[in-house]
Every structure is written in C-alpha cells, then in structure tokens.
Image: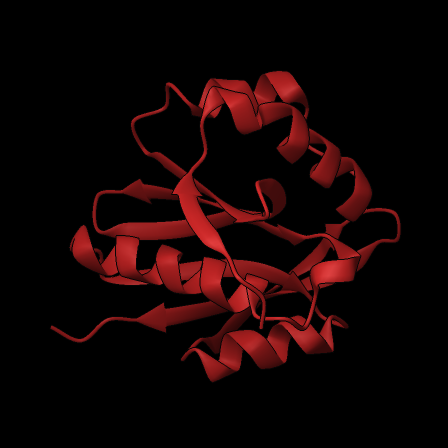
Length: 149
C-alpha cells in the first residue's frame, strides 16, 4: 500500500489523465473527451494522487438506477499496490450512495489480475461481449456488482 489521496477529477488533472490513458490503453480517450466529462452531469471521475501526482483514475456514468465504469487505469509502477482497489471502492460507494441498483464494467477476458480484483470486491460475471476490444481483438467479460437494499 502507498499513501493515496482520492479526489474528483478537475481540469488541473486532465493532462495527467490523458497521459495515463495513452500509457494504459491501445485506444485512449483524448484530452478533449476527458475534458467534456467535467461538464457531464452523469459522469463521476476520480483520480488517485500519490505525492501530488496522478497515478490512477476511474470514471463512472450514473444513469437512472444504473452505474457503468468507463475506465480504470493505473500506471504500471503503481499496480498491485492498492490503487485500483481504492479507485473501485470510491466508484462503488458513489454508485451505492446515488441509489443505483448495480455497478457494471467490461474487462478483457484474459486480464486475470483485474478479474480477480473485481471478484474480490463482489463483482460477478454476467455476460460476454464478443470482439469488444481492439489491438488485439478480444472478448470482454461483463462483470456486475448488484446492490441489495
């Protein structure tokens, strides 16, 4: 574990989050796309800061009684140190506090470390999206955590 501060994503974080996207994903979100989320009432994006620098982020959309994770990204040097877990926990708390029925995400079928993390937080496999990812083409598992009220 490392010392982290979790905060809502602000304009000052955009360049760092855009760089994180480029490092972690073959089809990264652009700076402009991330910037547009700041004005999206359904979007809730959070950053993980270590020593003042962005080391990870998560985005979720809350629509009606549903919550969907857009992306979770953590710099490779900060993986397996609790950053992803902390980000997922704040997303789960946000979804629960907003009264959603569930929180759902997609994950590459072969991303076993992420799948294990999601399962440890109560997510279950609910379906499959064929050829969802590109570079390389791969199926996605749909994983969902249902809230009981």
